[in-house]
Length: 600
Ligand code: PEP
Ligand code: MG
Image 1 (cartoon, rainbow, N blue to C red):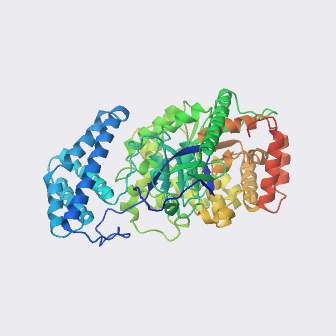
Image 2 (cartoon, rainbow, N blue to C red):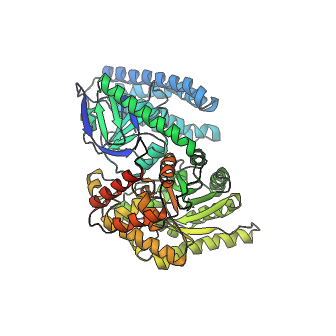
Image 3 (spheres, rainbow, N blue to C red):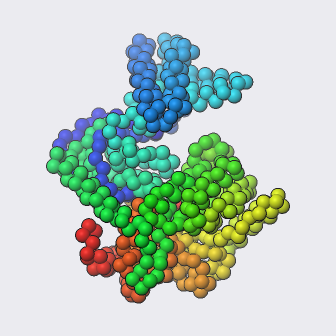
C-alpha cells in the first residue's frame, strides 16, 4: 500500500456526499494511498509510468529516492524509540545501514548504466540480496532477508513518488484516502495518526468499516475517482455520520467540524457516567450489551465502555500477520488473554472466518492465491475449516485449553444447516477427547452458531435443538437475503437490514430460539443501530453485541424502553412492505422515546 501523488489541483472548497461507514468527524491533510506491486515492469499487473530517461537521469532519480528513504528511516527511528521501544527503533537503524550497502546502491547504479530502469534495478538487486541472506546459515542473518525486502520496497515506492502505510512520520493526523483498504491494513491504523478514512469502495458493513468503528476512526466511502479529486496534502474534512466530505474546507467549515467533534466528545463524556449502571429496561429485563473485538486487547475497550461480555471475537485477525497460521500455543495465549481480560464475563469466540473480504495471507499455502469468483458465496469460514482438519483442530484445541480461564463460548460462523453444525461439533468433540486422553481436563463449554445464511434462519427450530445459542450476523444475513454484496458501495441502496425480508428472518430465528429456550443474541452491525434496538428487544433478543464505543449509547436507550412497548414496535415494524417504511417508523418511534436526549 502506497501513497500516490496526483497532478490535478482542486481550488476552493467543495462538498461531496458519500456513504457513512464509521461515525465521528475528522479534519486533516489528505494522505493518498494505493497498492503497487513490487515487481519488474514486465511482471507487474499495473506497471508504473514508463519513462525514457538517460542513465544519468536514472542515477539522479535513484539517489533522490535513496535520500528520501534515509530521511524516512531516520524519522521512524527517532519516533519509534519513544513509541515502539528500542527494539523496533534498532530495526529502522539497521535498515538505514542497508541503504549504504554497496551491494545494493552500487549494484543498482551498475544496472542503471546498462540502461535498466531504476524501478526494475531496485527489484532485481533486492531479490538478489534477499536470496543471499536467506541462504546464510546464521538464523539471525537469515531473518534480515525481510529487512532487505522492506528497504527495497521503500526505495521502490519513493521512486514512484508514493509513500508507505507507516504513518509514524506524520506531523498531524491525516485523512487517509484510498481506492480501497483491506481489513488488515485498517487494523494496523491508529486514531492517533489517522483522523479519518476516505475510500472509493466498501459498504457500511465491510470489515474495513467495522474495524474503523472499533478504532473510532471516522470513515466515508462511495466517492469515485478520488485520485482525480484529491491531491496529497489537500485539507479534507469528513463527516462520518452523514457521509459528507469537504475538500479544502474554509476556515468557517473547519471550525464547524471542530465544533461537531467537540459536541460528540462532550456527549461521550456524559455517557461515560452510565458505565457501571445495568442495561435494564423499565420493566426490569436486563439486556446483555456486549462488545465485538478483533484482538484480545479489545476487551479493555469493552470494559471501559461498560460492556458485560464479548459477543464476537473475530479470530481471523490473529491469522492476518505472519507467513503461517498461528500455532496452538500462540492462539492459546490470545484466547486466555481475552478470557482473563473479561474477568469471568461471557466471551464468545468465533472460529476462523477467513475468506469473503478478509484475505488471510498466512492461508495462501492452503488456499492458493487464485481469487474466488464470488468470495462471499465461496470457500469461506467453516467451509475451509471442515476441509482443513489440522487448521481447525489447532484452533479448537487452543480454545478448549483456554476454557478454564473464563466463561468461554465457542461459535461457528457460516452454518448453512444441520450438516455444518454436526460436522463442526464432531471436530470439537474429537479435539476434546484428544485433550482428555492427554490428561488435560476441559470444562463444559457452550457451543453456538451464527445465523447469517438465510437457510439457517429458515430452519432455526431444528438448529436450536442442537446449539446452545444463536447469534445473528446481520451483516451477512442482509447481503445473502437481498443478494447485495456488503462490500459494493454501488449496491448499498439494496443492502438494508430493515428490509421486510430480513425482518421476517429475524422473526423466524427468534421463534426458533424461543421454542428451545436457547440464548438469542445478535453480533451484526444492526445490533448497535439505535433505531433497530427497540425492534430487536421486541423480537426477543437478549444480547446485543456491537462496536464497544456504541455500548453507552445503546445503554442509555435500553434504560428508557420497556419490553411491552418494544413488542408493540416489533409487531408494527413487521407489518410494513418496504424498508423505507420500516426505517421511517422506527426513527419516529425512537425520536418520541428519546425526546429528552438533547444530542440525538
Ligand atoms: C455478520 O456477518 O453479521 C458478522 C457479525 O460477521 P462478520 O461481519 O465478521 O462477517
Ligand atoms: Mg458474517
